[in-house]
Image 1 (cartoon, helix red, strand yellow):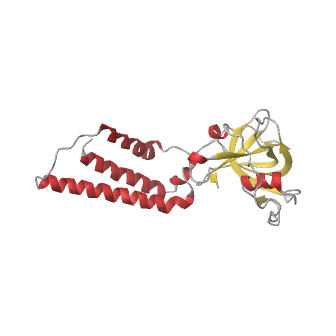
Image 2 (image 1 turned 30 degrees about the vertical axis):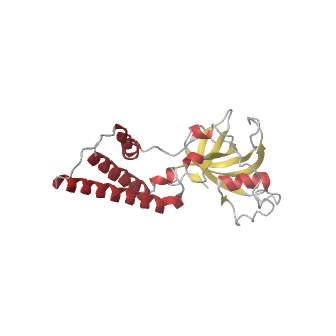
Amino acid sequence: MNRDAQSILLVLLGAAITRIAADNTFEQYVRAGLRPWLIAAGVVLIAVGLYALVRENLRRFRGEHEPTEKLRVGWLLVLPVLAIFIVAPGALGAYSASRGGGGVGAAPPDANGFSPLPAGNPVSDTVRDFSQRALWDNAKTLHGRQITLTGFVTPRDGTTIYLTRMMITCCAADASPIKVTITGTIGKRPANSWLKITGTYAGVDKAHLADGDDPLPILHAQTVQSVSAPTNPYES
């Protein structure tokens, strides 16, 4: 790979990063708050690539061009560009979720001070908050309430499924699943399909857990609606 090709690839890589930051595709890979940093990184790569391309061609025009060793390894830069522009890998789904326990881990610092849920039924909640309340809320704020959760289907043995959201701290590389066991009449639902389910808290599921896994909360479904995957599929 000569210097011109290296410069052009830097420009393309910067353009690819800027593109996914502009159209929200980046939210399938990193937290939403990182958008400004991605845009800045993309602009810097484009600027560096253009500067190197112009500088090299000016040197060539002046007769100052020096022969350089061609680096074949540089063509590896093509891979992320192709992945973004052509393949566009999707967000993590049921396969990744099936490889983790799905619990929320240790109790949060404010486990004894959960705020009351908003008035009225049903109330929309995150899978993470529902799970924490189900396992750690001594005030039992879920009892007697209708809760609406949105997530993707992770298959489970028997007639139930897991409704899942992946939780990330920084990016998809550190993602871990949070699962809720769904009971009731839900019909046949394929893995990775997104559902909005309204139901009631129905206890804690300790079945099918490997040693060391946390118990999972149960939501007894009353209504089930198929929905499109959200722009940001992760919880944080």
